[in-house]
Length: 77
Image 1 (cartoon, rainbow, N blue to C red):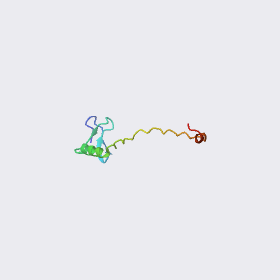
Image 2: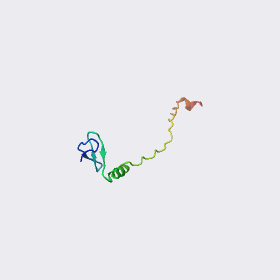
Image 3: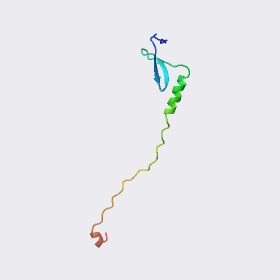
Image 4: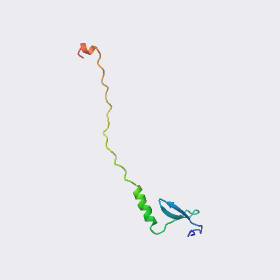
């Protein structure tokens, strides 16, 4: 089949299981009946919904507890 725009021989390619005709010189793409529907259906099936972000509360850094010295046993500070 020839390209309707420039008369170059069309090349067939397989995209996601759908055969499409394209022109290597003008890069035009031609689809047969129902091929666009197949491409749309398969692209929707591949686009899985993104998982919803999980809420994680902000973590505050833990304060390091100061180690008591041996003097704290003897004196009340």
